[in-house]
Image (cartoon, rainbow, N blue to C red):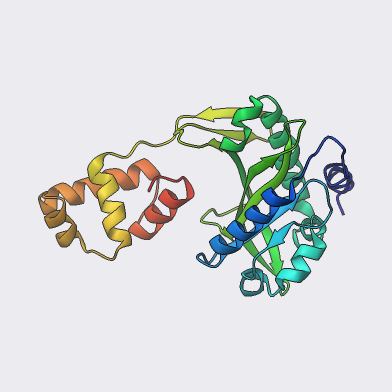
Length: 252
């Protein structure tokens, strides 16, 4: 067990008088999360800075990891310690700690506009599954720090663990943490033109290149050349990878 990660979780899950949790707010948040979870295949949970247990967990954990929602909720932050390989605890520790410091440097009114994500392996029947985890503050305490955070876990499109990223709502640029240098690096992100966006959107709906050309009122050659440029821009080799990339970086 990673000592630093364990101590960090003990710190952030300790009841604190500066937090003010209104029952009407939390009730609405729980019902909203449950409604969202019923309409997605992703694992949804809400972490609680006042408790070592999670505030809410969806039933999709059973499909992904073979764990009931009640079990994951009860485990809370210990879930990371027990189901993430120890060699990747440093990634989690860095994501949580540096993400928290990053939020502290933002205006309190803007902190819920950011999300923090990383890729980690979780153990599923002794097999390792690479997942992409995102955490978004949804309720702040009176001290301006996250009280409840909406977390989403789903299979990752990446090939290795790491990839600690902070994104802000409606902003194309994002920050990626360099663990070797110990600093955030700002990246400009990718801009899709109208044709590229149309190719991804229509491809996700099952349309072939000929149909996409007709719908976008472009020649087939134009669509094919736009697709090639899109693959180069994303550094992918097929449409499946391109659509996964677009979803990962919120491009469509």
